[in-house]
Each structure stands twice: as C-alpha cells, then as structure tokens.
Length: 477
Image (cartoon, rainbow, N blue to C red; front, side, top):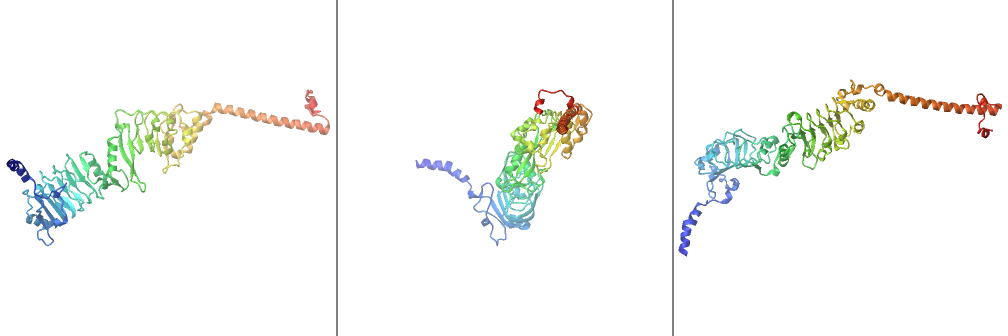
C-alpha cells in the first residue's frame, strides 16, 4: 500500500506542488501593493529591489526621474518579463512617461503616494497590464491616449488625485474603476462612464463629482454622489416615449443630500407621431413640462399625482379647448409659468383665473393665452376683459387674445355694444322702480297735507273734497 502511495505522490502530487508559486499569497489581491517596510533601506544607493517573498515582484521607493531610471537598472527590473508586478512608492515626478519599455511586460503596475503632475505618453500596444493603480499622487491630467492600449485592463485606481476628467481607457470589457476623492472631478465626465454598463465603481459611497459645467445642469459647485448621478442616467434612459428628461436644477436643503428637479421635453417638433394627451406618469420631482407642437386636446392628466411638483407648463400650438381641467389641481397652487398659446380655447372661465394668487410663489407668475380666438359676448366684455386689464403685467401676450365672432381684441371690447339689449332692459326696470318710489312719496305727502288742512281749516283741499266717500271713511271720522 505504501508503494502505491509513493507512486501516486511522485506522478501526481509532486508535479502539482512544483507548479505552485513559492511567493507569499498576500502579495497579490486585486492589485500588487507593498507597505513602506518593503522598501530598500534608507541608505541603499539602489532605490529598487526585487522581493524575496513575492515571486517576480519588485518595489521602488523615494525616487525622482533620475533615481527611478537607475533603480530599475540596478534592481534588474527590465523588459525581459522576469518582473511582472511593480510598486513605486513616493515618486516625485513632474511627468510620468508611460512609454517606458519596462511597463509593457508588467501585469500589476502600482504607483502611489507620490507627487506627479501629469501622465504623458502612451502605453505600447500589447501591454499586458491588468491592474493599474495610480492613486494618491496629485495627478491633474492624462494625455488623451495614455491608457487606450490597455486591452487586458480589469482594475483602474485613480483615487486621491486632482483629476477633472476620467481619462479614456479601453472601450470594451469589464473594468472596476476607482475615482473617489478627486475633488475637481466633473459630473459630465463621470456621466459618460455610466453609459457603459460593464463598468463598476469601487468606493462608490465616497465618490462624488462637481456639478459645475455639466451640460448647464446646475449653476452651482455642489457635489453629487455617484448614486445620484446614476439616477440621472436612469432618468434619461427611461424617459417617457421620445421625450427627453434632464435635470433642471439642484435643490439643496440643509442637513439633507442635494436632490435634483427634472425637466421633461416632449415638444412635438421632434416627433412624427405627435402626442394626443399629456404624458403620464412623469418622472419624480418633475417641475417643467414642454408639450408644445402636439395634438393634445385636454389638460385632464394634470390631476395625476406625478404632476404634483409641476410649476412650468408649456403647451403652445395644440388643440386644447378648455382650461376647466386646471381647477382644483396642485398645479394651480404651485405654478410659475403657464403657456397655452395658439390652442382652441373658446371660453375662459374667469372665476378660475380670479382665484390665482399671483404673489404666492417666489417668482412672479405668468400666463400666456395669445392667439386663442375666443367667442366674445357680454360676459367676456364684463368679466374676462376686466380681469385681463387688471393683470396685464401677468399676461405678457394680452394684446394677442382676439375674438372669433367679431374683429376685435378682447382688451378693446365695448361693453355698451355687446351688452346693449340687457343693459336697456335693466335701465327700464330702474326707471320704473324710481317712478314708483316717487309716486309713493308724493302720495304720502299729499295725504299728510290734506289731513293737516282738514284739522286746521275744517275743509278738505281739492281733489280730496271731490272724491266720493268710501266705506272705510268712517274710520277717519
């Protein structure tokens, strides 16, 4: 039995053991990284050395442009491929030139805790680097094609630098990216990365970007977390139909994370098949909706709960026939701008407009109703015209609201012409009532005068003396 075990060991187990690396497995995790204790002694003339406990690995420390070149030579770190993992600590370089032939044969390349302003050059084609760690160096800029040839790249660590943009790297394949602690990183650059679903982020919770200069999203320098930026990306990707959904502004409340308000553009200029109704549901916190140039006939969808934050509605050039659906909606309490130009509105419910508190919001409210042809009558002249004249500064296009049945602008309507029949009848009633009151007053005065004459002179004046006696006269006698 022992003989059989010996044969099995010699034929199977021993060869397998001989293939196992003799280095410390702790050397390689995701990337090759060594602590300061692994550096050459402070007095060593050669600032690079290969590590005895890590197979085909080396470390360089406290180098500049010249001592790095010397260290690679005296440390026997060359382009022959014998060293596949290299960690350079505390390098002080104005520029890091990555065209060096040594880098081409590395699988793990780590340069950390240094002072490097810029990365120049371009990794050579067929460079096999799979993990590149350039964190904590203060790097401000990469040349455009520096990393594009790293086709084996699976992990890229650019954290703790001063980058404003994510440098270009391989266009296909999964890559784990760490860009945390880059205070000047612009969201516009990070947003481009989010369009690649195979890219994942390391240290996502501590990764933020500056909202300044990002597609004119926000006029601020507030920082957005990657989670918020992902929401923006999902917002654009899952927008209603052919509409476009974009952030409109950044809302900041003390003690809370910034949130963004949304703008939805469904203008029919871009559509072959125009909308016939308002889009529902709207994305969360939508404050602006543009549905101009469509075939929408009603505003009834404004009562949908997803419209609760809406404050700007632009619905010009549609077929909307009434503003009645606005009544009782949250929009009427919150809106700052409502534009219904060039629709099919024939009647304006003045009572609805009269309930608007124009100074309730932070910004002055405005309503546009121009190019609608109303059916003008006495009510239009007496109610809507009067309202319009008192709110001219809130209705910028008041001069373009015209009548359908007569050739006139609403603000120029003449009440005496439109309300002529009703006004004359009312005047006659007033005249009759006035005459009756006067006659009653005269009659009372005459009776009082006759009574006074009768009591003082003993006779009745004319015509009371000529009137026949009535059955009730005995009451007076």
